[in-house]
Length: 188
Length: 277
Image (spheres, rainbow over the protein chains, first blue to last red):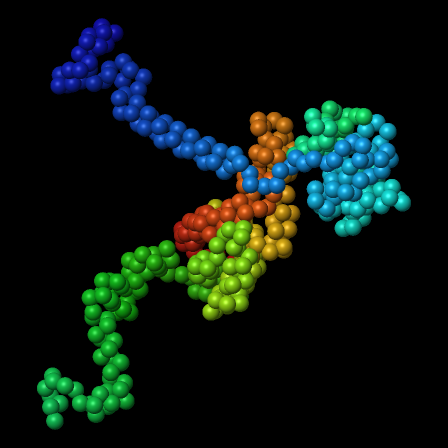
């Protein structure tokens, strides 16, 4: 121990070259200078690689999408009759707009089986998919065919100008208990 | 006659040389002794075991190959040559694919018409497109047959288990090459096939917005998930076309090529092609 305390003093004195000094040198520090720079180098390399990977991943998600807007206006609430399923926007926007006694809600015309567009049959009061025969009730509950879950409802609200605004990017799923949530139905 | 002088050779002599075949020996001699030949191949073909080894081992293009193989490795009944045929088909898709790239533009407005232009107006364009297409189809078939053969012959067993895993990756990349190439004609079939295909990415565990456990990952939404990463948006549109093009022409071939190098090299390191027991 006495030797060690002496050796601390002669740290830069490499030219001293005593055997005891060389032996004790690793005990004084956790890492040798070489270890430190090696680790620092590798850490820098790994950090650069890791950060670049993060940047690259973020780069692959553009801020702006040059796609049709998922939000559109669908007339006034008074355009829809109670008990009716409006097929007016199926061709352009792929949605049915349903008016019941409580209010208006939007059903996404995308079969939950494999993504075909079902059709509304007024006489049978059901949506029927032409691809594999899935059937859905008026509010979208699946009751026949291979569809595994009900049709999705989309966000609907009333704009300040009195027009209905539908946002197709916000979905409300029955199986998650979301059909009663605010925005899933325009109460009138 | 100036036959003995090294002057202008007479036509009669020349005809005589051609007739006797002597001219070919002379041409061979000139070629083999030229500096270009010697510096390229480095070892003349004196047919000795050592030279046979050196021919392979000292050539950058051939050095991946074993210098000697077992006699059974040539048995077509055992290997079906499926790996080799797969590689040949890969090479033909690379060559024809690069040729197609001279005309094809991966842009929403152009892609479909460039494909039609290649097919109906570019000289030999139809041939190139169809060679690319059929070689790709055939490659998928042969790569499965190759896997089937390796499985049947038990060639996946140690010490070849590492190479089997590399091979599984190569099958996957072959399928991904086919899938990404599927979109490039930019017709209705391509659009909907890739729409259905990429819809599966919604169900990716953790990273797909409709997949299991996605609720535990921060920030996963229809806008930021595995599917939108793949197609660069929320629908199969021009960004998806460009992404698939880059994946198809650059990324996947590079990765698959690197894996192929490892795959071929490991065959040799694992003791050559497995043989019948």
